[in-house]
Amino acid sequence: MNKIKILLLFLTASFCAVSILSVSSSAHTVSIVVEHDPQYTGWDIYDESEAHHSNYTTAITVNKGDFTSADFGNYITNAVTQWNNATFNGTDLLYMKESSTGYIKFCKKTLAQMQKVNKGNAWAFVYRSKATTDSNSHYTLNSGNVEIWVNWDDVLSAKATGCKTHTALHELGHVIGLVDIPASVSPNAYLMCNEFGSYYSVPKEITINDKQGAAVILGQHTNHSFSNSGTWNEKIDNTQHRRICSVCEGYTIQNHSFGAWSDYGQWLQVRFCCCGYAQYRDK
Amino acid sequence: MKHSLIPKYVIIAAVTLSITACSSETVQDEKNDLLGHSGISATSHSILEDNADPIYVADSFVDIQATGTPQSYEDLQDFIKPYESVNFLKYEIISQYTPEEAYEFSGDDMFLYGATLYDIHVTYDYMNSQPLDIYTRLSSAGTPESQFEGFPPYLPGEVYACFLPDFDENQINYEFSELLFAIDCISEDVQAYHLGFEKINFVDQTGKSIADSDFSPLSVITSTRNNPVYYVKKIQSDKLVEYLYNDWLSRDYDFQTSFRKTKEEHE
Ligand SMILES: [Zn+2]
Ligand SMILES: [Zn+2]
Ligand SMILES: [Zn+2]
Image (cartoon, rainbow over all chains, first blue to last red; front, side):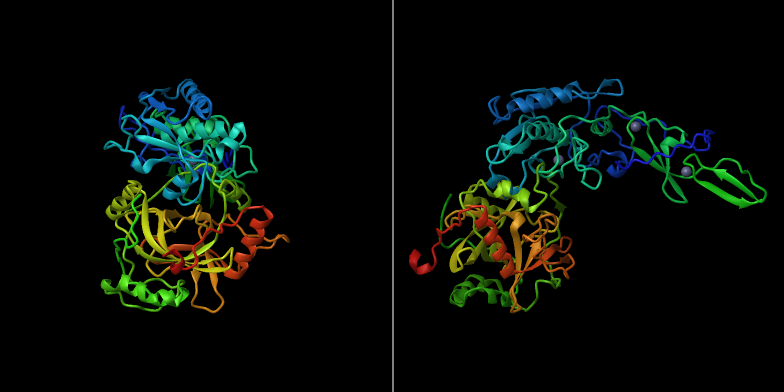
C-alpha cells in the first residue's frame, strides 16, 4: 500500500488553514468532497453522476435470484450478513437484507451470455447497463433492477471456497458504489481488488479500506477530520499538499501554508508547512 | 431464433474493399451485390492507419467492472476448458444490423442495449488448415452509442481471426474476446494484431514471447472518432496459429471439425 505518512512531531502549530471541516449532506444527495485516488486512499468510489446505491439508511435489498443454498445461495447470504453487520467509526455502516423482491438480483449466466455483453471473460459482474436510476444517479428500488451476473456452472463453482465468498461480497461492494482497485495499488489486499488471477488468494472479508469508501459514498461518514499533524498532511510538490481525513483517508489538495520564519543557523531562515515542507531564505 | 439465408443488410459506412483481398475470389461477386446499393467507394488503406472519416462518436463507454478476469494466458484456460471444442477462424465483417433489425431477427433484447449484430464471412479454419466459405452472424459486445474502450464497432471489410466458441453457422456466433486479432493481409507476411488484453501473453516453452518485440502498442482510429482500436501486440499469423495449435493439442482440447467447407456442399 502506498500511503506515505510523514511524521514530523515538531510541527504542531496551526500552520494550515482549515478550509473544509464539515460537509453537508441530506438523505438523498450525498456530497462527496474528498478526493479518492486509490493510490492514496486504498479505496475508490463512483462519481456522484454514476449509478450507485442511494445512502446508508435505505435498505439494500438482495434477491438470491437464480441461486439456492445448494449452489451460490449461501455465499450470497454470508455476504449480505457481513455487509449488514459491518460497522465504521463506531456505528452501523449500512443496511442490507435479503428479499425475494430485492432490487439487487443474482443471475446465473453462461460463458456465452457474459461474453456477448462484455469484452472478455469473468467470474462475475454487476450488469449496470440495464439498471435504472433516479435523477441523483441512485438505483431505483424496483424488484430485480440491478442484476449481478455470475458464471457459476462453468467457472466459479470449481473455484476455492474463498473465491465464492469473495465474489458475493465484492459484487455487492460495486452496488454500494465501490470501484475496483487495480493491481498497481494492490493485487489482493482489499475486497475491491480485482486483478488477482489464479496466483493470489482473494480477500474474503470487508477490510477497513473498503468500509472507508462505502462510508463516504453512502454518506455514513461526512464530517471529515483534518488535523495539522504531519501524519495527515503529505507534500505533493513545492506548491501543494494532500490533507488527509484521519477517519476515511480521503483527502483534499491545498496549497502549502507556512508558519513564521525562524533562524536556521548563522545565515538562513526557515519556515515549515504542516506537511513537513521547509522553505529557506537568506537572513 | 428466426433463420433466413438473405438477411436484411445494413450498410453503414464507406469501407475499404481492397482489404477483401483476404477473401476468396469466388464470393466477390456476391459480396459486391450485397454492398452494391450503398454507394461505397473502395479505397485502399492499411489497418495501421487512421481512418480519416470515422462514422461514429461514442456517447459513453461501457464500464463493466468484472471480477475474476483472466490475468494471464494460463488463467484463460478456465474459460476455454468448459467448451467441447476449440477453433480459430478467419472472417471478414460484411455488414452491421441496426439494434431494431438485430432484435427483430433474434428476439434478443440484448441487441437493444448491450451488443451489436454483424453479418460475417468466415473464410479460413486455421486449426484444420482449410478454407471455408460460410456466411453467418456474429454478436459483439457494445453498441455504437455505448462502446468498450479500445473496441470500436467493426467496419465492413475488416478482417479478424478469433476463437468463436460453439461455432454454428446457423446460430448467432460470438467472440472469445481475449483471442481476437485484427488481420493485416496487405503485406505478404500476414500479421495478427492483438486487440487489448495486454496481460494475455503468448510465451513459448523457452519463456520467450512469440510477439514482435519491436512493436509498440498502437491506437488506430477505425469506425469511431473518440475510440481508437488498441493493438497491443503484433504476431506473425503463422507463428500465432502454430502456437495455439500446439498449445491446445498439449492440453487435449478437441479441435472443432464440424465445418461445411463449401457453399455447394451445403445446398
Ligand atoms: Zn469488481
Ligand atoms: Zn473522512
Ligand atoms: Zn504543505
